[in-house]
Image 1 (cartoon, rainbow, N blue to C red):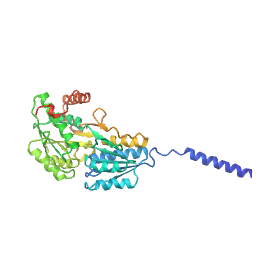
Image 2 (cartoon, rainbow, N blue to C red):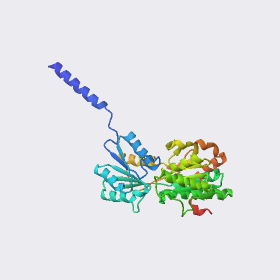
Image 3 (spheres, one colour):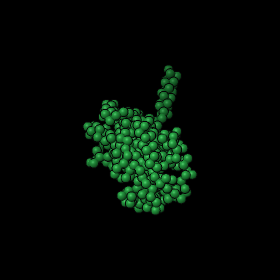
Image 4 (tube, rainbow, N blue to C red):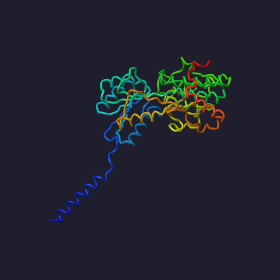
Length: 347
């Protein structure tokens, strides 16, 4: 009898020790985060892919459950958001300006669900939508100054996908950077495709054929550096530049040297929006219970939320003096002593 009691007690102690030695569940266990893409798709190698990288980091670090739904057309936005609502997701992230209205309608009808949206914000604020915005014109200003300092033809070009603020903000900053270079150097580098009000737009974020055609037309006009602000459409521009030669491409949203490596030899730099970091930060806030939609998240040069990518294979094309000037300009933008408004510089 005593032996049986002894063994029973031993087994109980061992079981208790086994439970005690088990690692605690991840901080985000049981939480679900869903991403609804814009029409560029999850593999756009641009803003949708970058946002998903942020969700994936949250999955790895916190053990949350993550899923994305792709939108093939604007008509899919509402249905995809509703699909996550039907599954009781804790955070729904919508990616892109065009999802603004559908996100607001869903959030206002589901106040207990947390939302975040990239490249859009509301006035007045919606208490359960975290706005994620980027001062992309700050980084684009650097890219414009760089392009003006590198061009051999005296002409650089840009075009957009759809004429919406998250697109034209790139083009404004780029234009301002070129104009500032002209002011400082007494040059007359010309920007084709955007004058601050009117410009070239493909009216889509999907057509590689449009990307090729627009780049070819800009090169025909003499541009030897091209900035396509159109997501994967820009990959068509990369193909055109690779085929013809004699020009550089500036990527957008991510470092295209990494995200689209098949064209590494034609990249001058990329204007980066650290969407992954922003999405991760919002996801982290949900996990830690500190989610607060009252103040938008802004990515800036100061917090490394935006920036230009390394020059990689174009390193030798950029003179050391120009690199030093870019560092000084970045500090001026951060300090607020240097305007990035193209209207502040004469055409």
